[in-house]
Amino acid sequence: MDAVGVLAICPCVLSETPLSRGKNGAAAAHGRAHSLSFRSYRHLAAFQPSPFLALSSSCRHAGTVRARRTKTRIFLPHLVAAMEGVEETYIMIKPDGVQRGLVGEIISRFEKKGFLLKGLKLFQCPKELAEEHYKDLKDKSFYPKLIDYITSGPVVCMAWEGVGVVASSRKLIGATNPLQAEPGTIRGDLAVQTGRNVVHGSDSPENGHREIDLWFKEGELCHWVPAQAPWLRE
Image 1 (cartoon, rainbow, N blue to C red):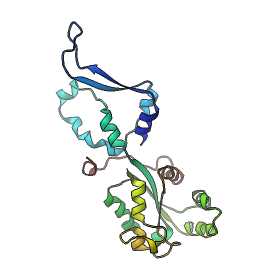
Image 2: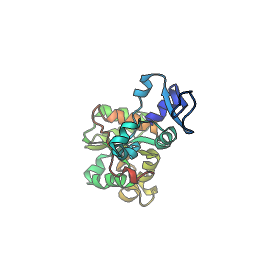
Image 3: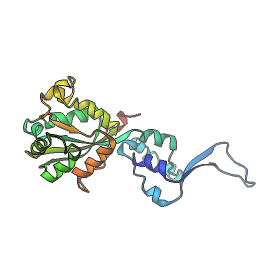
Image 4: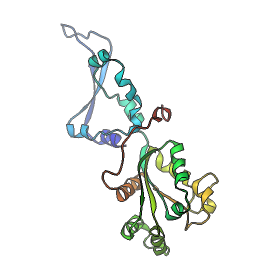
C-alpha cells in the first residue's frame, strides 16, 4: 500500500526512450524501453514494497554476465497490480481466548489463509491503553465492563498483512455476537456470548494502521518474505 500511495501522490513521469541509437541518431532497434522517473529522491526513498511483491526475487541470480548487462527497472503495470489491495490489520486474542488455550488454533486460521504475520506478542494491557483503544465506545453503558475485561489477563497482539486482509479477517472472525456468527468462523466455532467473543479484528484499513501503531512499539514488527509467497499470488 505504501508504494501505491507514493505512485499516487508523488510527481513522477513514465517516459519512453529508444533501446539504442546509431551514429545518425536513428533508433537501432524497433523496441522502446519504459522507465519511471521520480522528480526527487525523497519520493523514491519512500518506496518500500511489501514482502508480497518479492515474488520475482529468485530471478536475480539468473547469470553473472546477464546481470552485468541488465539494469534493474520497475515495470509499472506489474507494480500496481502487485500492490493492489495489500493491507495491514490488528488482530487481538482477548483474555478469554488466552485462558481457554485457543491461541494456537486462532493463529493457524490466519496462517492457513495465507496472510503474513508481521508482529506477535503476549501482553498485559494497561488500563490507559485499553481506554485509548476503545475510546469510540466510551459513551456505551458496557464500556466500564469492557475495560475491566480486556485488562483482566494477558492478550495476544498480532499484526497481519495481506491482500484484502481487513475484510477477509472480519469474515474469518465472524459476527460480534457468536450466536449469530456462521459455523466455520472463529466466534461461530469457539464462543457463545458477546462479552466473551475471544478475538478482536480491525474494522477498516485505517483502523488497522492506527491499532498496530497503538499496540506495537518501533522495532517490534518484522518485515520478511514468506517462502510460500509465489504459491499465494500469481
